[in-house]
Figure: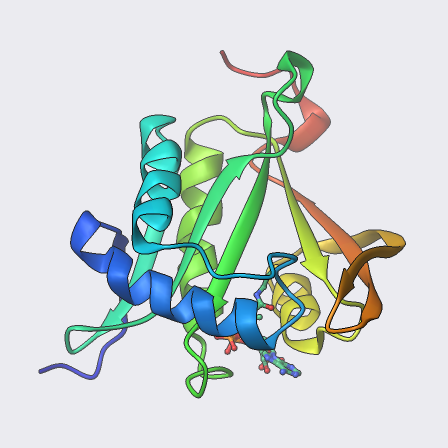
Length: 177
Ligand SMILES: CC(C)(COP(=O)(O)OP(=O)(O)OC[C@H]1O[C@@H](n2cnc3c(N)ncnc32)[C@H](O)[C@@H]1OP(=O)(O)O)[C@@H](O)C(=O)NCCC(=O)NCCS
């Protein structure tokens, strides 16, 4: 057993832990606008969709235990958006504020920059999601917008906070491929 947090590419065997982490946040939080947690099969399908696009999906592990995960997917599917991604990051309840989210996201950001992507968007459920807003600020994201009351969950309207940061040279040069 080691105390070091290791961030590594996720494999199928990690998906049960990922499903459990996400299910908690779906049931109890406003970060995700899903009402019902996806099944393990659906979580595996979503993971495959990410890796089939050659995009990073990582888990943070300590002593064999999965503490959290992060990945990037397409922001929107129309072709002009192809250098822009949207990220997701979730940390197991009770293990937050220990640097896990930051460690996982740093790897996702550098992997995406290395693949030539130029912009990353975070669509954060709930204006009061201090943890996610702070994490993204710390990672160099700027708040670029607020979509007011676009969600309805737990009997109330919920905002989406939009945050953005550039990857690599951002808009300073044309894309490489
Ligand atoms: C948001 C989330 C991923 C952050 O991960 P984390 O491992 O707790 O964050 P880290 O420990 O890496 O913290 C990064 C920074 O954010 C700050 N932070 C994290 N949670 C915070 C909170 N609840 N309130 C205030 N600041 C917080 C940390 O103090 C740190 O800032 P610092 O550099 O000033 O010390 C995690 O809280 C989570 O899973 N939340 C529920 C789901 C969610 O909101 N996901 C994001 C969807 S976009």
